[in-house]
Image (cartoon, rainbow, N blue to C red; front, side, top):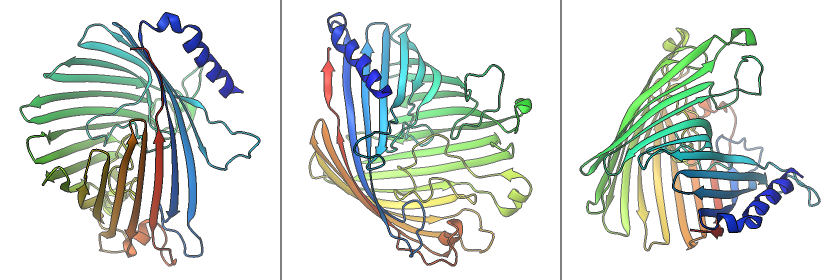
Length: 421
């Protein structure tokens, strides 16, 4: 019923009042994305007494964009369902608002956006819309932007969250969120180089009851990126460095860092290679016993784009992670490409029960084909080559497990219903 009401309102708005909005820039489009996966060791090891699962899911989005000289606005409705979770004669709706925001343009350089909005910065490592996810990431916040074309960009965001429509302050414990947020992002080109820097502060309640709302921990992340990517140069690179300090969600002293480097070389328009390394600091047994946290937290970035597609290390080991990787890409034309990447993983601090740090390796193969501007096909296969340390971290010691592998096919249809521009 809720779903029918929402769609009815949108169609009435678009078509009953279409003559009023036709002079403005109004876009009405959508996304129907179906992904079928074979999971046989995806995210975690599977005991050999079990069998792999074939799972299908459907994500549907409807986007309504509006713009004039001073105002921009967007509303995105989203529904996700697993194929078969409901019977043929009923529906279990998960329809909700993914984005709903409005922007006021004070000038061509300065704007303010308020509402629920997706955030994406730099290589999406810390802040990402996480498009691979079936639900995506979005934040309820105020975002101020000051941008000078070809000069620099400066963004400031802030948020204050509650778990309900409270009459007094209560403990905030919503999963994968924060009590408050503030960040400052700066970006500027220097010739052929692009530089960006960020300061990010998120706070958490670590008290257990509503009488302890004054107990807050403050986590800070500072750092930046330096990149080179120009069409006339075959070599490109992207260097990243972040430092975290303050206190974690449990109010433990935090002192952690991330260093990353990715380099690519194009031999021709068809063939290219890439090599890189990610180093996430970790917590030793001694640090843990002393109540210190030295494990880097990846905040609210994408989980699927880094450290292997089979997603064994989306949540970093307490002991940290080192990821050395290399890959090759074949792109014969603008519509098709296929790439293969090989990862070698290890922890950066020793595990409690062994002095070995190696965590095994992984191979990822991904292919993309653009059928039309509104229809695309993607598929992939990944496999993980585990070892004893993998078993320890995945809590599967002494258990015979299946050979870890994962495959998927994803079809994305993005119809454009209306564009009054």
